[in-house]
Image (cartoon, rainbow, N blue to C red; front, side, top):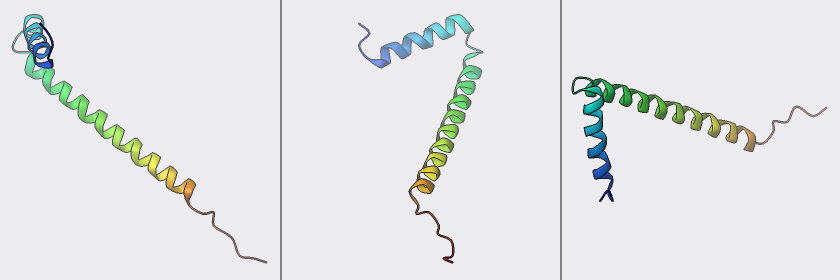
Length: 67
């Protein structure tokens, strides 16, 4: 009966309307969108830091002047 994601999505929307009312749904969607955006931004930042650390670890060590 509930084999596809569409069925679960419809149930979630109906439950949301019942619990929060139709006026709160846009506010919840906006908050969820902001949260997802912040998560993606944080993930991208951490990936950049990891790549920078890996590049620094793989770079040859600088050699000083020979005496």
